[in-house]
Amino acid sequence: MNLKEIQNLIKFVAKSGATEVKLEMNDVKITIKTVDVQTKTDTTYIQQMPSLAPQVASAPVAAPQVASAPAEVSLETAEDTNYITVKSPIIGTFYRKSSPDQPAFVEVGDTIKEGDVLCIIEAMKLFNEIESEVSGKIVKFLVDDATPVEFDQPLFLVDPS
Image (cartoon, rainbow, N blue to C red; front, top):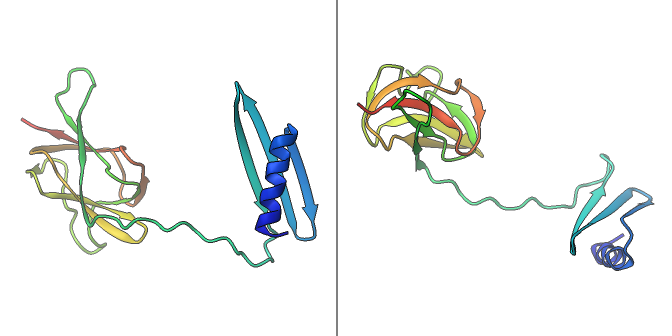
């Protein structure tokens, strides 16, 4: 079954009003599900290929990462604290040091200033230095070394006084 035939099948199912259609032919399994939510139709297309068949689909091309991304900073909303939370500007793996045999960029109690490198986040084999946008003293690490982090995830607490 080629792409044009699959597209025609999807259009046919959408027009027919069917909620789910399953099709199995040789080494191709196709499931088409549609959901009607207040005049808005959401259609899900799933094509499953057996593991022995060659993969023809191509992966989307990712945009290159910036080598030195500034850390996003927000004010901590916790009671009784005046700490600033340094958050991750990207998704990736958090590292406190540039290599296993090197010292950590910062430790709890270190005084930092704007532009100091706080950590590295690896994203798609690119190592991005995360720089501080605030001056102050590192109070606490909120992430363990060599762990995955999400966008906007808190990394450090900094005392700006």
